[in-house]
Length: 125
Length: 152
Ligand code: HEM
Image 1 (spheres, protein in one colour):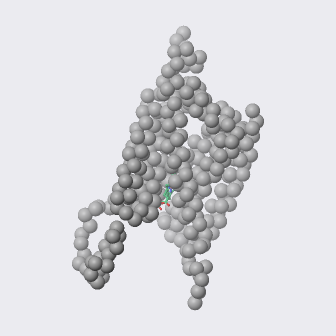
Image 2 (image 1 turned 45 degrees about the horizontal axis):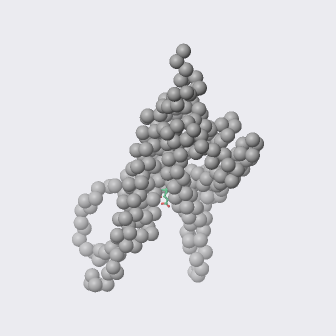
Image 3 (image 1 turned 90 degrees about the horizontal axis):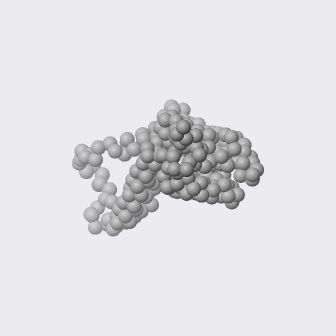
């Protein structure tokens, strides 16, 4: 008989942490979306107002924070695909743990080149 | 068991073998569950495509200004893209937050207040974003030097 939480199927294991990360990234992206619709709405005020708003995104400190935002979107998107596969693919639940590692792998594969590309753009001017 | 054991603010769980009551709420939660998955799959293409075109191609973030937006929204393709992304992401995110509020609030009053705030804020942002896409005017500045604004 398992006597520790590690003996359970879910608690403390990969599936729990992907759930935690999915929830946190979802909230983060949603709050950013509010700010992003409002800064984009500046195009209806004047070209100067819009350019001033996007200028903040080109600031080096904000530029580095954008990597965090893209990381959140990438993880949420990839793990979202995993959730859909767990729910709709007949072998999904069987491979949910392997797919968690797949999510992390593809996440790094896409994020690392992006970091390089984005930092080049932010600091290359 | 009697009802007196119920804690304030918790909902009553029916006693075992209590008679079946037909649901009157419809299947809203089923459709909302399906919507999260359907909109999620569409958002993969819409959001990652958006990030790729705006942050990775060309000069990335440095290229973004009023003229960049005017160039994209001169094309109905990007207008439809951005409109679909706005609506799907807002509805998906709002529905996700509805779940999170339901998970963590214990008092009915707090739950009602947070949901009201959420729906109000989401409504304002969806209407604002939609109006911006449909009423965008590349020549809002009468002295604009953009090529679409040259009359001769
Ligand atoms: C990029 C593609 C996306 C995919 C594939 C995706 C997929 C999913 C899935 C499958 C769920 C779980 C729903 C459930 O358990 O019933 C979910 C939850 C959620 N999503 Fe997304 N989503 C995406 C984009 C977004 C965006 C852009 C936002 C913000 C505007 C967002 C915010 C949320 C929130 C707040 C939740 C609730 C999290 C929770 O209940 O723990 N998602 N997403």
